[in-house]
Image (cartoon, rainbow, N blue to C red; front, top):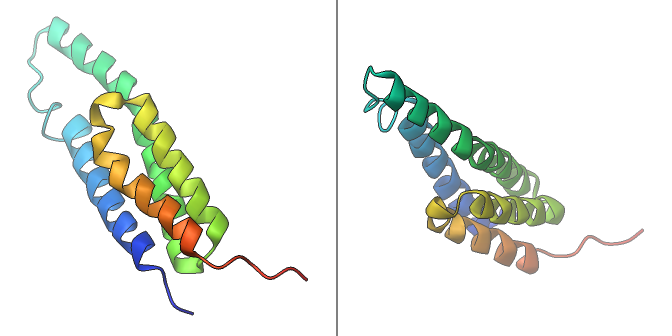
Amino acid sequence: MKRNKLLLVALILGAAYLVYSLWYWFGGGAAGAVGSDSASQAGAGIAAMLVMPHLLLTVVAVIFNALAFFMSKRAFALVAGILYAVAMALFIAYALFLLIQMILCFVAYAKMPKPKEA
């Protein structure tokens, strides 16, 4: 069975964004710039809690994107596109980083053949 190239591109972009975002928020970027005083640590904690729903939905969207690509299932592509859209709405400042993945998942869903009814 032929795999969908649009889903592959969305998967690569989604995984790259996820790795970058996890590193930035919890590894070295913003997390590494936190000072030792309690005010900056409290601010970093609040920022991490604000971005957590966005990151969790992005993880789930990347998983569904991978399932859609490897299993060639239309429904998984649709779910991945919807999850990318909801993740964009939860953290609008980083919405542009997920826009391409969302569009690619919806286009891949539209181009995939419908399953034959028994």
